[in-house]
Image (cartoon, rainbow, N blue to C red; front, side, top):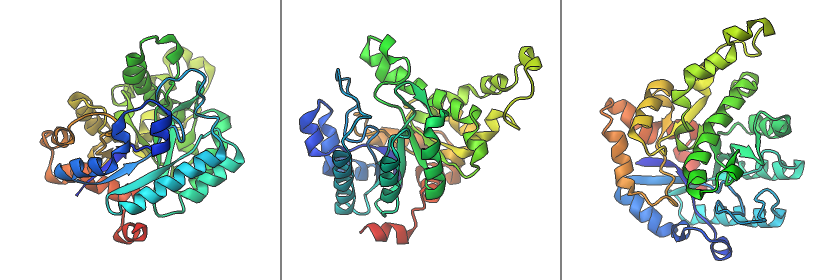
Length: 318
């Protein structure tokens, strides 16, 4: 059974409220199409909580009423239970949220339907190395679950991009690797060696920027500025990062396998809402001509280990 770690669904109330792809509401159809391609389980989440990735003037995804967000997560939990064996979920939380919001998220990941958190790679122009996110990372360390890092509706720099296609396909993609870089350079991984993140969209272009990230750590022409804050090279913290296959680029996928290792690549489609044929996405992995073990790990084994998908855990949802 193939496991897809990156899918999305949306409650009927949200589909009626905001313009968004109808596929987000076709849960039975999604499961059926994925089963035909050998994908038996999808981990779904909302990167906007009770909001939307569509640009809507005046809408602030981070100013959601607590009751609406709680109702959304209740719907998500019910949906997972109604499709037991085929769905699990991430709990959405604003990493700069209030103590009450963080406490509510902590309660969610104690429920068997939720296997980790989903947070935005930046929030209102702030990356996650900002001290304002300290409370969230303390919470994540205590909960000991993975964090799906997903780009926000409005990534850093998006106001300068008038073409929404650039926001959607390049701005959000770039936000992921910039966020990962700030997490590394800001010491989040050094501070918590057990921190585990899943980087959406294949981690952006981080695999291609590993050498430049190491150069940023201690450039020769800044040598007089003193010792670097990190005790080792930034790229050495890649061992705490897993990337999905939703870059939708065979070249990027090969780079990720080479740089992160096949044991740190997770099959993910970002479907729905992206309208890809999921069988084609499976073939992007099988056509890499990796060993049988590496292929099986990307498609299934890595997700089982990272998300703790034991038989007992799956039975608990049912």
